[in-house]
Image 1 (cartoon, rainbow, N blue to C red):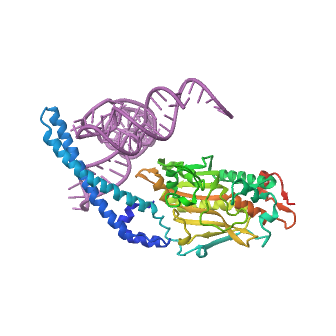
Image 2: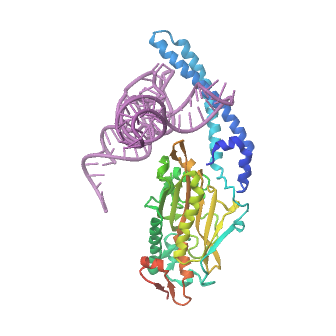
Image 3: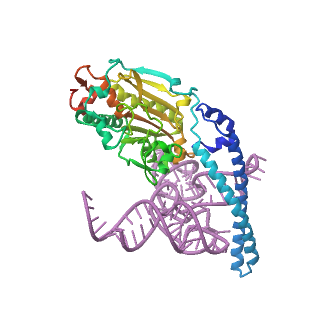
Length: 415
RNA sequence: GGAGAGAUGGCAGAGCGGUUGAAUGCACUGGUCUUGAAAACCAGCAAGGGGGCAACUCCUUCCAGGGUUCGAAUCCCUGUCUCUCCGCCA
């Protein structure tokens, strides 16, 4: 949620900056609601004040055994008026709140304009592409079974077995231990989240169709960002404790509504996938720095796994709802002969913190924290990248050195 | 599942119908003292919002939502969560 104050102060400037995200802010609507809010609020408060004053008087009269009929009549009259102003205020406030919850985060000043991922800015390319093109992971390994998964749950699910299942597990351990080494506290968290939590991180109310709803007020988490960030919901953090860095491995559940027919083959786009997530909660002056730091942490996973990748900075049109700035890390996939997203690292500035009420106590009072998060990494896609980039072209998938202590074997035989 | 108890400021914890936005302690901030620190002492210290150029002022908030009342942290109802005991299951 953006600060309503900046809308009151200079709404045109906000409109201009949101246009970078291709979001069209309805200035007229906001201003008219805001005008109504102000009017009714002043009325409500004045009436309340009257009642407060008269109530005190009433008490005194009663104490002195004096008649109170006149005063109660007066109060009654004021209350009737108050009721109607209160109703108006409630309605107007609700509309304003809905509008506010619907406005995306303001992009960082440096964000380039652009409509789609084609306009993203290449930051760097790292690692050497050893395999220019190859068979895809399904052709290389028989231990990925999508057909049987269909039987279990439907399309866009997978069953892994034997060495591929173990490789998958080894990757999770490898990533978690690396995160721990980089100063993140490891958490095990619920895989269900309630509405409040999802509003806090920005998935709700706008993107409900992307989620799996389980019960009245419960959803399967689309990312560990939700529980990890919300660990600090409604809390005030002493600034000396910053930065707070947390990590968790969780499954992630996404309905993938609107992506019918896209990436239907293989593990690339699933309803359920594993991810190791990194989250930082930092002082507002440190968030840009923290984003670079977190990006480095995510890149390290790829480097150690000897996977070629590139980093792009998202243009305005590709930037997510809650993000002010995002770097995507894209790994080379030989079967597709292109780079595909494997991590997304974003600075959410105070957008999530304001929604989740995560504050920092400083000597000048409390302020909203900044939140940063990113995947390190999406495990399923990492699995694909390893299989395809480290396949020797004949019969073996070579396990990168850094992973061998977790996988316990130097290669996987493919039959 | 049954039976009780509870939810109050950063924390602990009083208050149980009327200057109580809330005693007290701890923490925190400023000051005195000290070579420096600690201790001691003095002072300040909840949040959110509105109006005003400003000094300032007003409103709201004691888990959430309803209700009673001129007036609710205090009484009633509902929900959520926590704790204790019993049962059941792992």
